[in-house]
Image 1 (tube, rainbow, N blue to C red):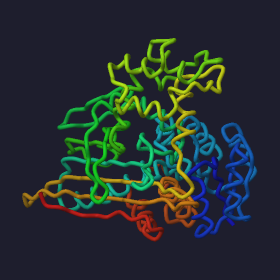
Image 2 (cartoon, one colour):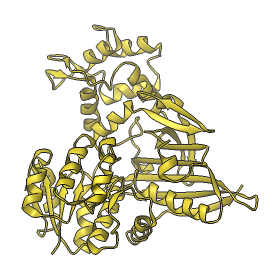
Image 3 (cartoon, rainbow, N blue to C red):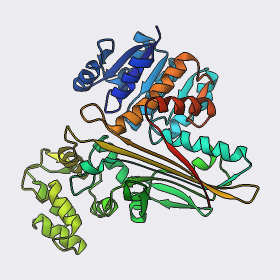
Image 4 (cartoon, rainbow, N blue to C red):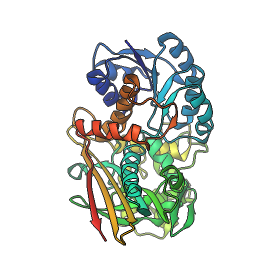
Length: 439
């Protein structure tokens, strides 16, 4: 029996393992440093072998012991390059749902020459969005069409009935990853011109976007959209925008917090300090009441929605910080993890919207729309974990079965990958609604 080694047993690992238990016909070994994470995986089936290990340091030893055909890397981005290099050296195929790093891209020739298959950026976003877009773009090109614009927006949010806090957000993925995105540089292509928004400036350029049957959301650009001009094979495109969806007021909140350094990583002395004291210091008014300091810093009234949100989360509390030394980001992460959680009976919501505008030789112009609306299953797993964990599980199965067989470093934009994976996602009830509108 073939073996799959999963490195990392966090939030998205359970749907990955569940799929392979049902359809993979393989031995599954899961390694993680957290006993709690491994216990959750073990509860899925006694057939899964779990190993407590520091996967960042012990990946090579784990591969030597279990000799997997495929390694799934569910690791933080900063650990991904090292683990990918180890898999290359040990001649193991790889799947993972994370954006490729430049260091991993540089391994492309070595991966292909070794006859290995590395499938990256195969989750929800990136992943399902890539496959949906590639399918439509290839259809457009086959008909002689030209793509003028491509926009892809995705959000992992609380379902409308579970949106019960003033932040309009609950954690369906890592708080550290969420907060890290708050300082991310974004680049878009607009009317043929590249526009760069560094260090979280993207939140200052949000716009409203309506999703049918759900309502109006905020949208803002994330990461570098311009690279998809080449990877999606749309050199003719004049505008490319990849972004994130949030409930309204999220971007305003992040902009204010960025301005007072709440996402910085430099450690500070916080021994004996309260949350309120820390907030006042971040505002530049140490010793002042936290609420007054925040209002003064931004010339706001006490009834401002931003001020009320900060108070609700705990930034004005007289509780002592649980750190002797911490960065501002650590403090934010602590409060997010404490207050922005789902109740057991609540569910999350994933929304993915792709729009492609193309013209054709007959003079017509059409807009191709792909919409995914998916809900979590309370008491089981979130939609975010399912839509991120199932796609790489499908790719793992198809590599084992020889249905994905072309060596090299891939993102899921070739028919060999996206056609069978999208078809199997339908079998898993992860379905995109596709429409084409004449403009």
